[in-house]
Length: 329
Image 1 (tube, rainbow, N blue to C red):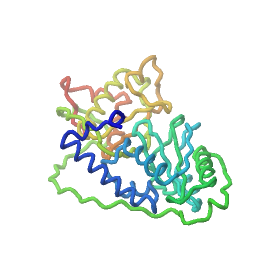
Image 2: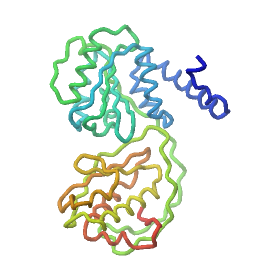
Image 3: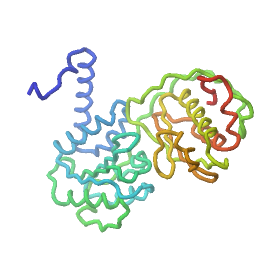
Image 4: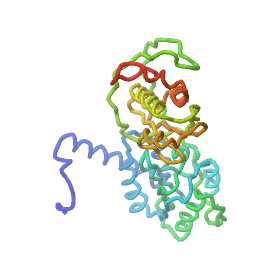
């Protein structure tokens, strides 16, 4: 047994305390999982320490090993956008408990009660080819072929197919419950300096500020919808790219715990420089962006600056000393 288990984490006080806390938290969640949906439990807890890796362990340990849920999975054949309609469909499935687990390409593993539209909305847009798994069961009671059928049918619903819900899945005690997150204490008020902000064009070079170190979120994060920025320049060229880099750097300096993702033609762009190569992004094209994090702010302002950066007015963002960050936010 000692050869198969890595106990090195317990050799330090910090590691031991972390393990003990994780076990206590898991026991608390497990005590509720026999009478509540696991997605509802985690949504209500809203604990930033429940990371993607821990969610995977909970799915295996609680739903599969402890409660015996049946599961089905697929790599989605198409992008799924209208999740509110899907939640409305699943709200009719009161004869079985369902948990949806989606492997988000940027945020990692996310889970939700698919009968709850607010939880399902946290998935954002489900991307084509990404993994989606459905768990179906009866809160610990012995499962049957109806659970296997429910998991398989639920996948078809996510992919847009029209299905006939068997009567055994439509009647029961597993109706969706209204879940609300606990209110967090508001941080103490800080004095705010009021300054006039430009509503249209950035005419002069903005002041500069040194970039803050990037902080990686420690727990589950949210992601905005994808917002489109229409290219107003004749071509999205190198100047536009450099403007976008400085705008995003300024945003992340102000919000180091937030991440900005860029998309073009439904694909994520890892290197913004690739947008101007060979002139593939022209006037009228739409480049999309999304922001992810725990406390998302200034998205509208970011979109306004990115729009200007994609136009002939991009040069306003290229002024100022090298290796500094514009103070735009």
